[in-house]
Length: 61
Image 1: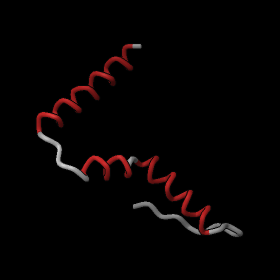
Image 2: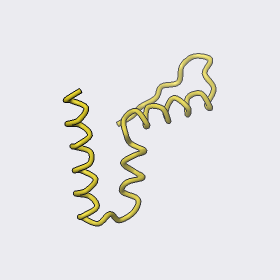
Image 3: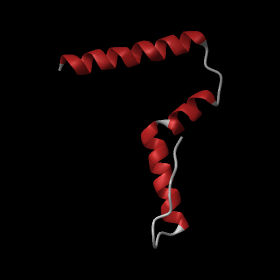
Image 4: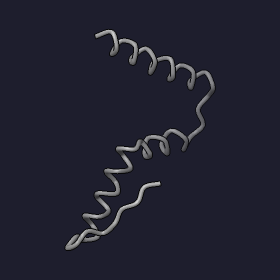
């Protein structure tokens, strides 16, 4: 769970900006976007395969 405490002399806009950055860093926005629509099981497998291939290629170099 992401928590943001107000710093001294910090505006609401700055606090919201920090919160958004933390959400992006955690991958929360990506997960929400991915689950907001139906994904066929074959598409899910294809996405996972592409992700694993990228990871393997990155580890080799």
